[in-house]
Length: 429
Image (cartoon, rainbow, N blue to C red; front, side):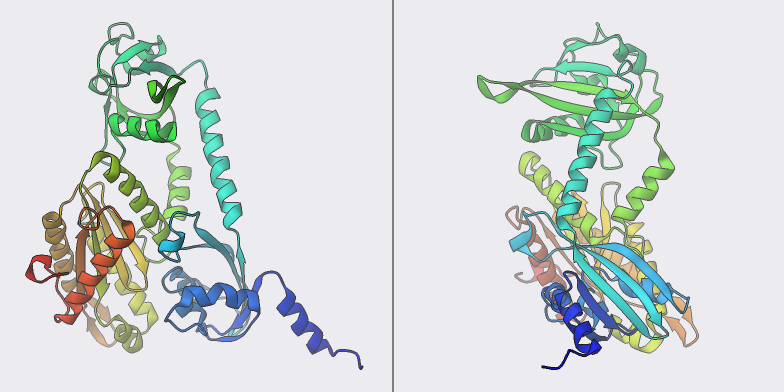
């Protein structure tokens, strides 16, 4: 047999490579990919075009198109290890999310080389390390300056150390026997849990840590790290009480905000990303199961958005998405979360909202979108949106059923003429 040509050897290498490799143009049209890339793309694409990189990732990483469009040099690395958090549906919801690392390199005026690798286990390990680091830093950093208390199962203070007085201004002896929640006043307007809710999570998980604004006796606010740990009782399945640690810590605003934005925000619009939204839904679902607070979901889809991109171009389409996100996010209550779920679809998670409240807010969003006007070289661009609402109670506590119900109502709004909020009481869901 004759020796293999260099082209054949190259093809063998590409197909045997343990990471996904593909080549495409700047519009995302794939010219070549190896089996590993195909293995990643096909499940994600679903009914969408698997031969186009951006279409395949539209629901999971719509920012890829924007990253390529924003990269102006003729050659170079567009992104390196960009993380894509993948949700493949209900069959995987209770497992750790699949995470792909995407690297894109511009090789020519209309040529991209892309690698895809599964880093799910690495991300799980990183999360565990972050939790461990936070745990030990809380207990050991500044060990002489933390307020330590023990509380009974019903939240009454059983003991406190002198640092509790120095930190809060409350006499650590006089507070014994009082409810800790009556002594400590926290600012929960930003979505932080109340002490009672934090205790319930500690009862379930063993511990819970959060940072937020706390108030001293004289009314001064300070940034406080609050750790609640359940104390085990071998004779009972329920905790015998809880240990509470309070630390007055610097807020580290710039670094913390940069990291928060990187992990939770959509690259294009600044709204929450799909991963953060999914995590918030699961967290609120746990609260719903334990506390039975109402929880509503609003889904919003821009009408005829493909025509906007086709007529005005993707940069104008991106501008419209940003305006929609800003207009709708401004209407949310303090604990609400507004996210870009993919393409032109957005979602609003509304803790402690019932269906009527969600419908009212959805109508405000619809009106806000209809009022938008963007100046373009082809004249003014306006838009409309269709919306659907549902509550977790209607879905019997299932996130999948909640999303499916809200989606059905969204598409009912589209079938009824678009630019409207579907009213569930008007016809059966």
